[in-house]
Image (tube, rainbow, N blue to C red; front, side, top):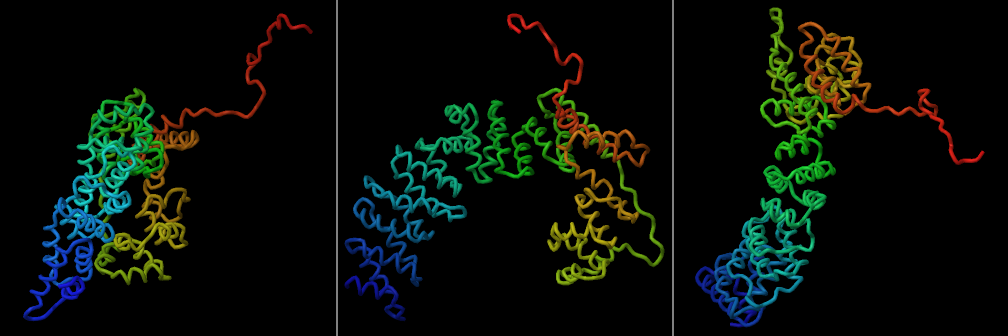
Length: 478
């Protein structure tokens, strides 16, 4: 049987002899000298051969030692079309010992290691990576890159076992920190923390979580400071930065981060500090946290009082809306309705829960001429009250509650701090207890960051009589 005949018989579907002819064709192709037979079998797999396992079993019987050219051809075909079934065969065959991997083929194979790649593909990539020269730093960079993209456990172990040295030090720093090998990171002598910052920028989120765990257990303060700079570099948003600092237990970094937060976000940190002995190292900041925690614990003593009983025949409007069980289509129609009460239903938690109301629509409702829309906006979003004037409708003002206060930035101005401090001193009576607690927390943090800012007056006139002193010029001749 010729190769052409074998190719034709690979798809023989005859009732009696079709299967036998297909198996004979596979045997002829896999045993034929050269690369063509193997490539024909790979092509048949790609075209939906009726019995792919028969082809895969035949390819798995190839001998890397006796048939290195065929095995290399199989790897080349896999590089062009990375299929998990073929990857499993290649992972078992390996690369022919003593035969160098062509540079382009190595790059193509390593590029198959991507996020979400099938485990068999990652195993095959690890096999080819193990066959690459250990002392090739440029090649090692490509292996590290494949590890970062795919987060492959096989590649991670290979890098450690073979001691692969990349050309880019940040890659080595990342691997050391992600795997918890702090002694290896220390050997890089990253005194200024620049490598840690670069490594953090290179890391996908799962690696950042593992890196954070290494930072958390390290007694080295310089590592924590470098990690803090990495978070401040803009690679992650402030909210994620706070979560990362929590993960590493960096109390100093968390306190510093509060200057970029609003009071609502700082309350979450107060809850953490209330349940943890961790505090900033600076005595003043440690005392500030203790004062804020005392105020925060006072918030927990307040109970929500039930509203008055409704007159007979009336129902709560929110309960009524929920009992109607409107569809998404009905809620979308509500949002476009002229009737403000219908629009309020669409804006309410019903629309929020289904993702039908974006921030822009809610901001528009907060400025609406119709009070039901303003009411809903202040109920569902504290930010809607920020900067809003006092409303002439009692219910809208009442529902705003502490919204504007909760949205106040910690990193304000000395004038902001003076205003909040004055409001704190003037708050009286049991009804103001919650507001006093919130203002106390806000003023405590603002007192650290903004209360003592120095103002510079633009003048060249002395402000005191002793500001200008005249002395004898000594040897100067007049």
